[in-house]
Image 1 (cartoon, rainbow, N blue to C red):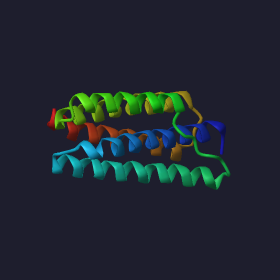
Image 2: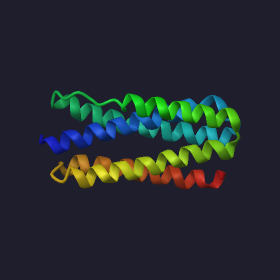
Image 3: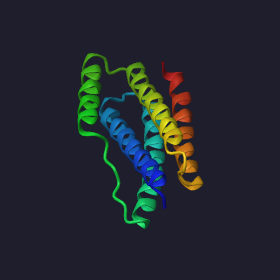
Image 4: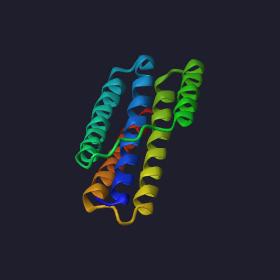
Length: 143
């Protein structure tokens, strides 16, 4: 397994962790049961993709990557502040859409950066992007 493959898998794994952290953070604020169900569904999808990245990294005795500490702290504080001011369905959907956009952009950037990554890891990254796009499209109905 080459370095680009390892790096792409690590970034996808870290992105999945960031996504699940965000989804779990907003759960206590969700009042709309349909939205809660949708976020639960996509949280599960992100967990599965993250697990697949983790398994591939383990296979090659590579450590997974956690989201950067400062970025994680800033994201958590920012989300909490926004939800303290306004915790309605619209705000939660808006926060999740922002996260989807960030995920799509960063994973796309990593696919382009790690040009010699294996087809298998690129397919996994593209699946993560597709999942983010689907999630965002569903969430647009809550704005």
